[in-house]
Image (cartoon, rainbow, N blue to C red; front, top):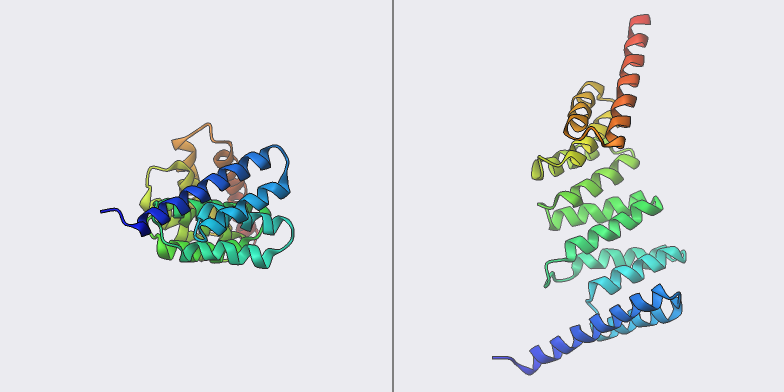
Length: 212
């Protein structure tokens, strides 16, 4: 039986979704202030509405209020996952941090995200990227390995693991994975370039060893 509480919750979500949709339209026509107002209206209707939280967090970062943006992003992981799409929203927040070069923030976000969602390859992939940029190469490798374990046929993940191994100086292992990535998709320009660079670096290391 539907209760008054269920009806209230349904209307709150409807209002939040409507305000969020309006914010997208306002943003598209360049009315930033109105778009932000709509996002705030969405959260007034439903304080746990993840899309609005994530979008406001990204705006906070863009206006140099990183502390507020960071708090918003991290608060996503304390929300219930009623619709089953929270992990995707968190991953988009992580991608946004990566695009800004905020790898330290991204690493912490992804570490919490993978703890909550241990079986989603994209989250481990994001953690690997952030860890590698922060110089935590063994962590990056472990995250890449976990992502590939979850999606063994994903060529992009094979390339990512190869690059993580390369950055850690494990050139022989890197070469194996990068060669496989190129074999899986010869048209992948990034994998091809990574393989070329790995081969050149490995040859240079061999020459130095011989000279020594």
